[in-house]
Image (cartoon, rainbow, N blue to C red; front, side, top):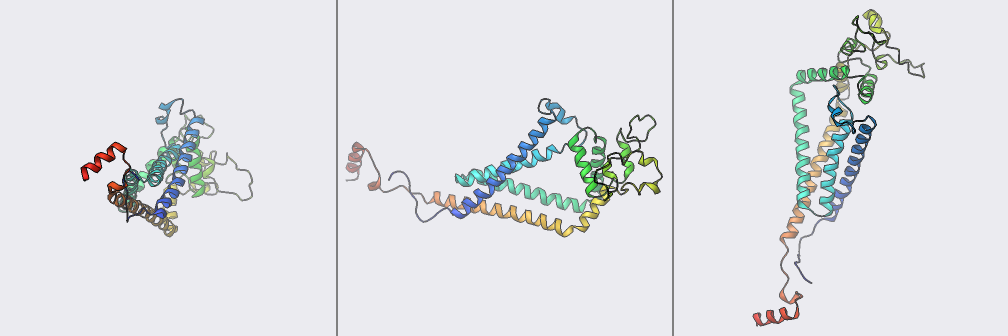
Length: 291
């Protein structure tokens, strides 16, 4: 036997392979999200013209896939390889990175609770910016349509917010067929219709306000989102608490594994001379030295 050996301390195989198995799922899912994002950008021609990433006035939903997928990929890689190779640097990086994310989530939650009115204003501004860019990106368009259909809403605070879009505004110089209208996702659902009428919102805002509510959802998405949060407060709180507990659990496991690895390394001692394999000449010199 050559080299160092240890006795007494061992690395927990359960913790090691639990961290490895859990993080390899995150790693693969992160790669999948990044791949979907790159594919979406490729389909839209963004990869052939990188400068077009900043041209969109609103939110490109592909960024959500890229950012979330990138974070999951980095975390999964550090946790997976760190646990498998017993690399304390990667495990510590995993713990610190996960701790930073937890701290940011906690800070965001506290600020959102304290500065409710400011958050509402920023949400209104965000939605209006995306309304302006509704026709500029198909992914953004689908995201807005999904939001308005899911929450039965129209615009940030009402249907008139669609005046911000050049295709839907009611100005005399607007040549668009969609002038003074709203997207089909604002229309009230008719259970009898099997096919979506994409022209149901045409000219609808030219009608009196009292008639509009018979055809479209007149409530804004910001108040509808607030109502949804109040109605599902227990579910939302449960999800946030569950995610937070998983993050804390992951940090504790990683730190426990780091402690085991460092304890094992600290217990390494040089083997006795009698157990070392030395070349014949070196063995004679060692024997003469110790005799």
